[in-house]
Image (cartoon, rainbow, N blue to C red; front, side):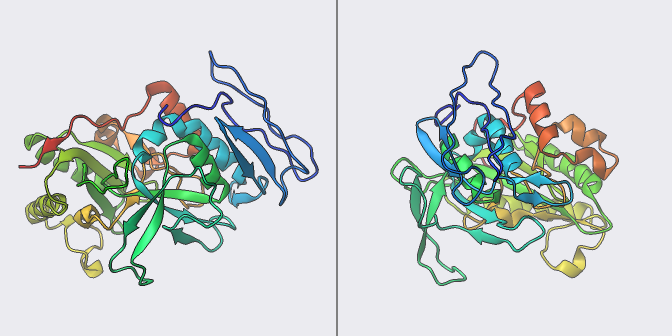
Length: 342
Protein backbone atom coordinates (compact mmCIF):
# COMPACT_ATOMS: atom_id res chain seq x y z
CA UNK A 1 0.00 0.00 0.00
CA UNK A 2 1.40 3.36 -0.99
CA UNK A 3 2.31 5.59 1.91
CA UNK A 4 2.94 2.88 4.50
CA UNK A 5 0.96 0.14 6.14
CA UNK A 6 -0.91 -0.35 9.35
CA UNK A 7 -0.51 -3.80 10.85
CA UNK A 8 -3.80 -3.43 12.69
CA UNK A 9 -6.51 -3.73 10.08
CA UNK A 10 -9.09 -1.72 11.96
CA UNK A 11 -9.05 0.50 14.95
CA UNK A 12 -10.55 -0.44 18.27
CA UNK A 13 -12.75 2.01 20.02
CA UNK A 14 -14.45 2.46 23.32
CA UNK A 15 -17.71 4.13 24.29
CA UNK A 16 -17.94 7.13 26.57
CA UNK A 17 -18.51 4.75 29.46
CA UNK A 18 -15.19 3.07 28.73
CA UNK A 19 -16.69 -0.21 27.56
CA UNK A 20 -14.97 -1.56 24.47
CA UNK A 21 -17.25 -1.99 21.45
CA UNK A 22 -14.91 -3.28 18.78
CA UNK A 23 -12.38 -6.01 18.42
CA UNK A 24 -9.09 -5.85 16.65
CA UNK A 25 -9.05 -7.77 13.43
CA UNK A 26 -6.08 -8.27 11.15
CA UNK A 27 -5.34 -9.19 7.60
CA UNK A 28 -4.50 -12.77 6.92
CA UNK A 29 -0.75 -13.16 7.08
CA UNK A 30 -0.25 -9.93 9.05
CA UNK A 31 0.31 -9.23 12.68
CA UNK A 32 -1.79 -6.97 14.85
CA UNK A 33 -0.22 -4.15 16.81
CA UNK A 34 -1.94 -3.29 20.06
CA UNK A 35 -3.68 0.06 20.20
CA UNK A 36 -3.76 2.01 23.42
CA UNK A 37 -6.61 4.08 24.81
CA UNK A 38 -5.88 7.20 26.85
CA UNK A 39 -8.20 8.80 29.36
CA UNK A 40 -11.87 8.12 28.98
CA UNK A 41 -12.49 6.64 25.57
CA UNK A 42 -14.92 7.89 22.94
CA UNK A 43 -15.66 11.30 24.43
CA UNK A 44 -14.11 14.70 23.86
CA UNK A 45 -10.75 13.53 25.17
CA UNK A 46 -10.91 10.71 22.67
CA UNK A 47 -8.88 7.66 21.92
CA UNK A 48 -5.30 7.78 20.67
CA UNK A 49 -4.55 5.08 18.11
CA UNK A 50 -1.34 4.12 16.41
CA UNK A 51 -1.52 4.25 12.61
CA UNK A 52 1.79 3.10 11.20
CA UNK A 53 4.37 5.39 12.77
CA UNK A 54 1.77 8.05 13.59
CA UNK A 55 -0.53 8.61 16.53
CA UNK A 56 -4.02 9.87 15.76
CA UNK A 57 -6.61 11.04 18.28
CA UNK A 58 -10.15 9.84 17.53
CA UNK A 59 -13.10 11.52 19.22
CA UNK A 60 -16.86 11.01 19.52
CA UNK A 61 -16.72 7.66 17.78
CA UNK A 62 -20.25 6.78 18.85
CA UNK A 63 -21.71 9.80 17.03
CA UNK A 64 -24.15 8.62 14.36
CA UNK A 65 -23.36 10.25 11.01
CA UNK A 66 -25.96 8.40 8.92
CA UNK A 67 -29.01 8.46 11.22
CA UNK A 68 -31.35 6.56 8.90
CA UNK A 69 -29.23 3.42 9.26
CA UNK A 70 -27.31 4.20 12.48
CA UNK A 71 -23.90 4.33 10.75
CA UNK A 72 -21.47 5.91 13.22
CA UNK A 73 -18.21 7.80 12.97
CA UNK A 74 -16.44 4.66 14.19
CA UNK A 75 -17.84 2.82 11.16
CA UNK A 76 -16.70 5.64 8.87
CA UNK A 77 -13.18 5.33 10.26
CA UNK A 78 -13.42 1.56 9.89
CA UNK A 79 -14.55 1.81 6.26
CA UNK A 80 -11.79 4.19 5.24
CA UNK A 81 -9.19 2.09 7.07
CA UNK A 82 -10.26 -1.09 5.32
CA UNK A 83 -10.65 0.44 1.86
CA UNK A 84 -7.37 2.38 2.05
CA UNK A 85 -5.25 -0.09 0.01
CA UNK A 86 -7.32 0.68 -3.10
CA UNK A 87 -8.27 4.26 -2.24
CA UNK A 88 -4.86 5.74 -1.42
CA UNK A 89 -3.39 5.37 -4.94
CA UNK A 90 -6.29 7.44 -6.30
CA UNK A 91 -5.63 10.22 -3.79
CA UNK A 92 -1.82 10.30 -3.94
CA UNK A 93 -0.48 13.58 -5.23
CA UNK A 94 -3.92 15.17 -5.64
CA UNK A 95 -4.80 18.28 -3.60
CA UNK A 96 -7.88 17.32 -1.61
CA UNK A 97 -11.13 19.15 -1.05
CA UNK A 98 -13.31 17.54 1.63
CA UNK A 99 -16.95 17.90 2.49
CA UNK A 100 -17.39 17.70 6.24
CA UNK A 101 -20.52 16.75 8.19
CA UNK A 102 -19.83 17.42 11.88
CA UNK A 103 -23.42 16.55 12.84
CA UNK A 104 -23.98 13.83 10.25
CA UNK A 105 -25.59 13.84 6.83
CA UNK A 106 -28.84 15.25 8.22
CA UNK A 107 -27.03 18.32 9.55
CA UNK A 108 -25.13 21.22 8.06
CA UNK A 109 -22.07 20.54 5.91
CA UNK A 110 -19.24 22.58 4.45
CA UNK A 111 -16.51 22.16 1.87
CA UNK A 112 -12.97 22.64 3.09
CA UNK A 113 -9.92 23.24 0.92
CA UNK A 114 -7.52 24.69 3.49
CA UNK A 115 -5.93 22.29 5.92
CA UNK A 116 -7.26 23.21 9.39
CA UNK A 117 -4.86 24.98 11.70
CA UNK A 118 -4.90 22.02 14.10
CA UNK A 119 -3.66 19.55 11.46
CA UNK A 120 -0.80 17.36 12.72
CA UNK A 121 2.62 18.41 11.50
CA UNK A 122 3.05 15.15 9.57
CA UNK A 123 0.05 15.82 7.30
CA UNK A 124 1.35 16.82 3.88
CA UNK A 125 0.00 20.10 2.53
CA UNK A 126 0.66 21.97 -0.68
CA UNK A 127 -0.03 25.62 -1.43
CA UNK A 128 -2.05 26.10 -4.63
CA UNK A 129 -3.26 29.36 -6.13
CA UNK A 130 -7.05 29.79 -6.11
CA UNK A 131 -7.83 32.65 -8.50
CA UNK A 132 -11.53 33.44 -8.62
CA UNK A 133 -12.11 32.04 -5.14
CA UNK A 134 -15.55 32.90 -3.77
CA UNK A 135 -13.81 34.03 -0.59
CA UNK A 136 -11.25 36.14 -2.41
CA UNK A 137 -8.33 33.99 -1.25
CA UNK A 138 -5.25 34.01 -3.45
CA UNK A 139 -4.23 30.50 -2.42
CA UNK A 140 -5.16 27.56 -0.23
CA UNK A 141 -3.04 25.04 1.66
CA UNK A 142 -4.55 21.76 0.48
CA UNK A 143 -4.11 18.43 2.22
CA UNK A 144 -2.50 15.72 0.09
CA UNK A 145 -3.36 12.23 1.32
CA UNK A 146 -0.46 9.85 0.87
CA UNK A 147 -0.68 7.65 3.96
CA UNK A 148 -3.36 5.92 5.96
CA UNK A 149 -2.82 8.08 9.03
CA UNK A 150 -3.96 11.16 7.11
CA UNK A 151 -7.04 9.31 5.89
CA UNK A 152 -7.94 8.23 9.44
CA UNK A 153 -7.38 11.76 10.74
CA UNK A 154 -9.75 13.12 8.07
CA UNK A 155 -12.38 10.48 8.84
CA UNK A 156 -12.30 11.60 12.46
CA UNK A 157 -13.14 15.13 11.25
CA UNK A 158 -16.30 13.69 9.64
CA UNK A 159 -14.81 14.44 6.22
CA UNK A 160 -17.18 11.98 4.58
CA UNK A 161 -16.69 13.06 0.98
CA UNK A 162 -13.26 13.26 -0.69
CA UNK A 163 -12.96 15.31 -3.89
CA UNK A 164 -9.86 15.55 -6.08
CA UNK A 165 -8.81 17.27 -9.33
CA UNK A 166 -7.76 15.50 -12.52
CA UNK A 167 -4.11 16.49 -12.00
CA UNK A 168 -1.37 15.91 -9.47
CA UNK A 169 1.40 17.88 -7.84
CA UNK A 170 5.01 16.82 -7.79
CA UNK A 171 7.23 16.11 -4.82
CA UNK A 172 7.98 19.84 -4.43
CA UNK A 173 4.39 20.93 -4.98
CA UNK A 174 4.65 21.85 -8.65
CA UNK A 175 1.31 21.52 -10.42
CA UNK A 176 1.30 19.13 -13.37
CA UNK A 177 -0.94 19.08 -16.44
CA UNK A 178 -4.08 16.90 -16.22
CA UNK A 179 -3.48 13.16 -16.32
CA UNK A 180 -7.15 12.13 -16.29
CA UNK A 181 -10.09 12.88 -18.55
CA UNK A 182 -13.55 12.75 -16.96
CA UNK A 183 -17.15 12.79 -18.15
CA UNK A 184 -19.71 13.26 -15.38
CA UNK A 185 -23.04 11.80 -16.51
CA UNK A 186 -25.86 13.43 -14.56
CA UNK A 187 -29.48 12.34 -15.12
CA UNK A 188 -32.28 14.89 -15.09
CA UNK A 189 -35.41 13.36 -13.56
CA UNK A 190 -37.22 11.23 -14.49
CA UNK A 191 -34.04 9.87 -16.13
CA UNK A 192 -31.89 7.72 -13.83
CA UNK A 193 -28.56 5.98 -13.79
CA UNK A 194 -30.05 3.46 -16.26
CA UNK A 195 -30.13 6.15 -18.94
CA UNK A 196 -26.62 7.19 -17.87
CA UNK A 197 -25.49 3.63 -18.59
CA UNK A 198 -26.76 3.80 -22.15
CA UNK A 199 -24.92 7.08 -22.71
CA UNK A 200 -21.78 5.68 -21.05
CA UNK A 201 -21.76 2.75 -23.49
CA UNK A 202 -21.83 5.12 -26.44
CA UNK A 203 -19.19 7.31 -24.84
CA UNK A 204 -16.98 4.28 -24.38
CA UNK A 205 -17.15 3.51 -28.11
CA UNK A 206 -15.99 7.03 -28.95
CA UNK A 207 -13.14 6.97 -26.45
CA UNK A 208 -11.88 3.54 -27.47
CA UNK A 209 -12.05 4.66 -31.07
CA UNK A 210 -9.71 7.51 -30.16
CA UNK A 211 -7.26 5.08 -28.57
CA UNK A 212 -8.23 5.69 -24.94
CA UNK A 213 -8.89 3.13 -22.19
CA UNK A 214 -11.97 4.27 -20.25
CA UNK A 215 -13.00 3.07 -16.80
CA UNK A 216 -16.28 3.81 -15.08
CA UNK A 217 -17.66 4.32 -11.59
CA UNK A 218 -20.89 5.37 -9.98
CA UNK A 219 -21.01 8.85 -8.55
CA UNK A 220 -22.42 7.38 -5.35
CA UNK A 221 -25.41 9.63 -5.87
CA UNK A 222 -27.47 9.59 -9.08
CA UNK A 223 -25.12 9.21 -12.01
CA UNK A 224 -22.00 7.72 -13.54
CA UNK A 225 -18.51 9.03 -14.19
CA UNK A 226 -16.29 7.83 -17.04
CA UNK A 227 -12.53 8.41 -16.84
CA UNK A 228 -9.54 7.76 -19.06
CA UNK A 229 -5.82 8.32 -18.46
CA UNK A 230 -4.43 10.92 -20.84
CA UNK A 231 -1.27 12.80 -21.68
CA UNK A 232 -1.65 16.48 -22.58
CA UNK A 233 0.69 19.43 -22.95
CA UNK A 234 -1.71 22.17 -21.80
CA UNK A 235 -4.18 22.35 -18.90
CA UNK A 236 -7.13 23.22 -21.14
CA UNK A 237 -6.77 20.39 -23.63
CA UNK A 238 -8.92 17.87 -21.72
CA UNK A 239 -11.78 20.36 -21.47
CA UNK A 240 -11.59 21.07 -25.20
CA UNK A 241 -11.70 17.40 -26.10
CA UNK A 242 -14.44 16.53 -23.59
CA UNK A 243 -16.63 19.39 -24.76
CA UNK A 244 -16.32 18.30 -28.39
CA UNK A 245 -17.27 14.72 -27.53
CA UNK A 246 -20.22 15.85 -25.40
CA UNK A 247 -21.54 18.10 -28.18
CA UNK A 248 -21.18 15.28 -30.70
CA UNK A 249 -23.19 12.79 -28.64
CA UNK A 250 -25.83 15.40 -27.83
CA UNK A 251 -26.21 16.20 -31.53
CA UNK A 252 -26.61 12.50 -32.35
CA UNK A 253 -29.28 11.96 -29.64
CA UNK A 254 -30.89 15.32 -28.81
CA UNK A 255 -33.90 13.55 -27.33
CA UNK A 256 -31.85 11.97 -24.54
CA UNK A 257 -28.52 13.79 -24.18
CA UNK A 258 -27.52 17.38 -23.46
CA UNK A 259 -24.13 19.02 -23.16
CA UNK A 260 -25.29 22.49 -22.04
CA UNK A 261 -25.49 23.37 -18.36
CA UNK A 262 -28.86 25.11 -18.82
CA UNK A 263 -31.01 23.37 -16.21
CA UNK A 264 -34.28 23.83 -18.09
CA UNK A 265 -32.93 21.71 -20.95
CA UNK A 266 -32.01 18.74 -18.76
CA UNK A 267 -35.39 17.30 -17.76
CA UNK A 268 -35.54 13.62 -18.66
CA UNK A 269 -32.11 13.75 -20.30
CA UNK A 270 -28.53 12.88 -19.38
CA UNK A 271 -26.14 15.78 -19.05
CA UNK A 272 -22.63 14.97 -20.23
CA UNK A 273 -20.82 17.36 -17.90
CA UNK A 274 -17.53 17.98 -19.67
CA UNK A 275 -16.78 21.03 -17.51
CA UNK A 276 -15.44 18.87 -14.69
CA UNK A 277 -12.17 18.85 -16.65
CA UNK A 278 -11.63 22.49 -15.71
CA UNK A 279 -8.40 22.39 -13.62
CA UNK A 280 -10.15 24.44 -10.93
CA UNK A 281 -12.83 21.77 -10.44
CA UNK A 282 -12.85 18.45 -8.61
CA UNK A 283 -14.82 15.22 -8.76
CA UNK A 284 -15.56 12.77 -6.00
CA UNK A 285 -12.76 10.24 -5.59
CA UNK A 286 -13.24 6.53 -6.26
CA UNK A 287 -14.32 4.73 -3.07
CA UNK A 288 -15.35 7.96 -1.33
CA UNK A 289 -18.44 7.86 0.83
CA UNK A 290 -21.31 10.14 -0.19
CA UNK A 291 -23.71 12.17 1.91
CA UNK A 292 -26.85 10.21 1.17
CA UNK A 293 -29.38 8.72 3.62
CA UNK A 294 -27.31 5.52 3.53
CA UNK A 295 -23.48 5.31 3.38
CA UNK A 296 -23.35 4.92 -0.39
CA UNK A 297 -19.98 4.91 -2.13
CA UNK A 298 -18.65 6.18 -5.44
CA UNK A 299 -18.04 2.67 -6.70
CA UNK A 300 -15.95 1.43 -9.65
CA UNK A 301 -18.00 -0.95 -11.79
CA UNK A 302 -17.33 -3.14 -14.79
CA UNK A 303 -18.50 -2.36 -18.29
CA UNK A 304 -20.52 -5.58 -18.15
CA UNK A 305 -22.38 -4.18 -15.14
CA UNK A 306 -23.04 -0.99 -17.07
CA UNK A 307 -24.34 -2.91 -20.07
CA UNK A 308 -26.58 -5.08 -17.91
CA UNK A 309 -28.07 -2.32 -15.75
CA UNK A 310 -31.86 -2.17 -16.03
CA UNK A 311 -32.83 -0.58 -12.71
CA UNK A 312 -31.17 2.13 -10.58
CA UNK A 313 -30.89 -0.16 -7.55
CA UNK A 314 -28.43 -2.38 -9.40
CA UNK A 315 -25.75 0.31 -9.22
CA UNK A 316 -26.19 1.47 -5.64
CA UNK A 317 -23.48 0.17 -3.33
CA UNK A 318 -22.97 0.90 0.36
CA UNK A 319 -19.77 0.66 2.38
CA UNK A 320 -19.98 -3.01 3.35
CA UNK A 321 -20.83 -4.06 -0.21
CA UNK A 322 -17.90 -2.13 -1.63
CA UNK A 323 -15.46 -3.75 0.77
CA UNK A 324 -16.79 -7.14 -0.29
CA UNK A 325 -16.46 -6.25 -3.98
CA UNK A 326 -12.84 -5.21 -3.49
CA UNK A 327 -12.11 -8.40 -1.55
CA UNK A 328 -13.44 -10.43 -4.49
CA UNK A 329 -12.11 -8.50 -7.45
CA UNK A 330 -9.57 -5.94 -6.29
CA UNK A 331 -9.53 -2.40 -7.62
CA UNK A 332 -11.73 -2.11 -10.72
CA UNK A 333 -10.55 1.47 -11.26
CA UNK A 334 -6.99 0.69 -12.27
CA UNK A 335 -6.27 2.92 -15.25
CA UNK A 336 -3.95 1.94 -18.07
CA UNK A 337 -1.17 3.90 -19.69
CA UNK A 338 -1.78 7.54 -20.50
CA UNK A 339 -2.47 8.28 -24.15
CA UNK A 340 -2.27 11.54 -26.04
CA UNK A 341 -5.59 13.04 -27.11
CA UNK A 342 -6.31 13.20 -30.85
